[in-house]
Length: 134
Image (cartoon, rainbow, N blue to C red; front, side, top):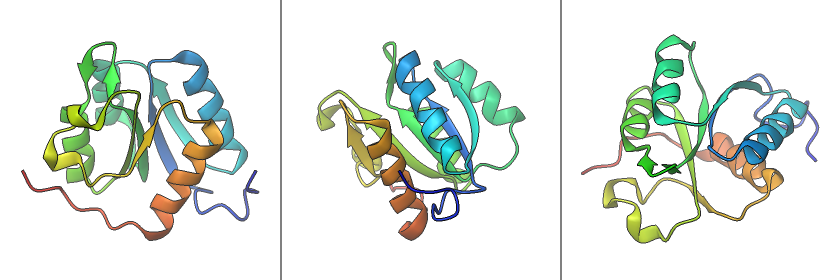
């Protein structure tokens, strides 16, 4: 595990949107261990939208793309418009992802929380956020 001092996520605010409780809880613990501030986790699009409206500035969002048959695309649009770096996770084929989101970093499930943290660290280290074109 990366130490808090060494992680580029230390001191960053990270939104977790995941409908599998154990994954969400383990990921939150993994991120807190490296010094990140965790927002959420939440398990539905409506909860995420309410949280986004009330939360302070976010740095990174880790989103399960499909929350109990509800796709998170409206949330992705709001996050990208706010210049939040987005990492999506999915257990589904890439074909369900519209072209405009295909350039976003993605982790295919099953994925460990350590792999998600490492992907978020890489995203923070080198990513430039821009809204994908339709």
